[in-house]
Image 1 (spheres, one colour):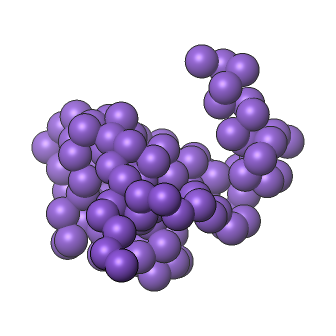
Image 2 (tube, helix red, strand yellow; image 1 turned 135 degrees about the vertical axis):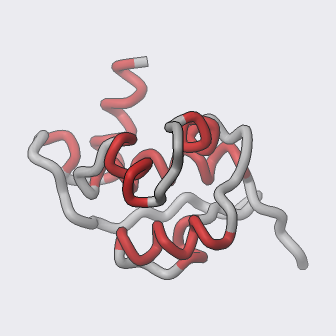
Length: 104
């Protein structure tokens, strides 16, 4: 059965993976040669998806396959451990997800 992409959860996953890898929005903007950061924030909010070209570039940066950046509807949001940042709550996805809920 066909499962469409869950834009909102994909945006959340992108935000988490980028943060866990130690990158900020400004770095991603420069890396992708974007003139402004708004598309990145729109990805994070689930308003739009990155283009295939941008997904390919992000997959290279994060050292994952492109499809690992996407979350399909009805599927779990799997996140492995990537280049972990300094904060202790980023040691695992569950700790980081809990931290995000506490900050919000």
